Every structure is written in structure tokens, then in C-alpha cells.
Length: 134
Image (cartoon, rainbow, N blue to C red):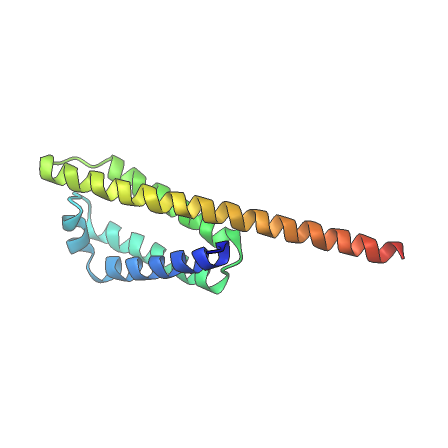
């Protein structure tokens, strides 16, 4: 799988997760054992939907995937602030592990897309220089 295919997969994941968070924010918060406002989960869902649309619209651009990394950091911050009983704590730990896994994919994909973009720019610059020298 190349970086653009991975970006598209992450975009669809974002879109799906975001729609679920928007549709059932209270249920998601309870399911993860979070004691946060359902409105916050809904806002995070809208962020996910936006990120998914951006990634799917520009799958070769690293910017939208780096934005996903920023969103992952927000998610991790909320999970780190979690307080609750043992059962809730276990759910928060599982959610944190899942977010860390997706964050790793996001970082790998964004870095690969950045290298791809930079290499394309370098090739274009070399090509232009070659044409002006003739």
C-alpha cells in the first residue's frame, strides 16, 4: 500500500468515525468511559468529518493528514484527563491505545506524503533548470 492509498483509507476512517461521533456523542462518551460533555464528542466528530473530507479531496497532500495528527493529539489530551472508576479507566486505556495506533499511521502517512511532495518539487525544479540551460 502506498502513501496515497493509506491517506484515502485514513480519510474514510475519519469520515466514518466522525459521523458516528456526531450521531451518538453521548453513547460514544459513555462507551469509552469518558466523563466529558457529549457536545465535546460531537465537536470532535465534526472535526473528524472535516479531516476526512479534506484527506479524500487532497489524498496526495500531506497537510490534511498532518491536521489529523493534530486532532489525534487533542483526542489523547482528553483521554489523558480522564478520571473515573476502574471499569472506566480500562475503557480509557483501550481507547488511548487505539488512538495511539491511528496516530502512528497518521504520522507515517503524513511523513511519506511530505517526502513525496518534496521529492516532486525537487524534480520539478531540476527539470526547469535543465530546460533553461538549453
